[in-house]
Length: 103
Figure 1 (tube, rainbow, N blue to C red):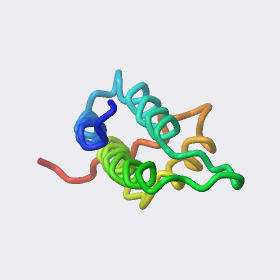
Figure 2: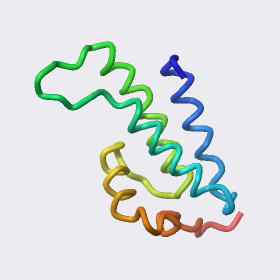
Figure 3: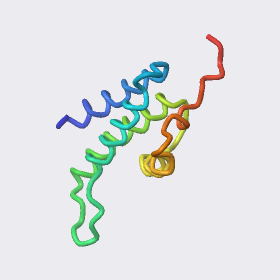
Figure 4: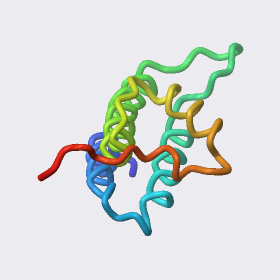
């Protein structure tokens, strides 16, 4: 989405699908892709615009909250998620911590 608030809210909402065991790996992969596509470039040649940084701050917050909600983890930023995902790309199901609280 072009609107960073909408993208952030949508990513947060996807975090509510952790119990959907058939689709949650796909949702996780899509949230990672959203973060990778939205994050400003890391080129050292050009400085990232303040607008791009502001947009990323909003979207990153939603993506991280969505990933944390989906998996029952509490990572602090998208870079941490990207590393964890890359380290477990062949077996993404291990990223989901089961909810230990009874409802």
